[in-house]
Length: 200
Ligand code: NI
Image (cartoon, rainbow, N blue to C red):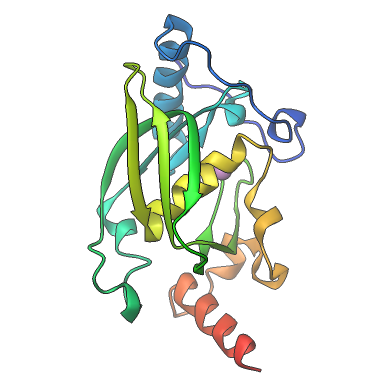
């Protein structure tokens, strides 16, 4: 196991379409996953895609801590029926995503390939995803809120898409250190500002 170097935005490995994994149970894939788990734990974050560690294969890992799970359900009345959902470390190999409807919501994202930056990104609220696990079985899940956001963010790394490419308002993109200088939590403030802007 090892801590791997993380590619930053601009490195070609982050722009290409990653290759399908032929054998999800192969020893080199299991080693890659173990190294990705170590790397994510070291870097601190909720998810990591293989291209971010310079391996152009369709593998992502993610988890949703309880504190983050609540983020996108709080104060959002039409989602009150959705229980905040913590998700343990999960490995998705050759994942496929489909939105369950057209509804989107904007939330704050950051990425280990854009250290120190953050921005407000619209994502589908509800998705279904399907993937192979390292034991070779199929997992299929429906996800909403932050869980759905993380899966969309990580899986898009496999198609060379980084979150700024999904942003619809670049005025919400910047250095976290600068944007965090406010009494309100950043996500709340940015959402409020965006709603005000959208009303105009
Ligand atoms: Ni990322």
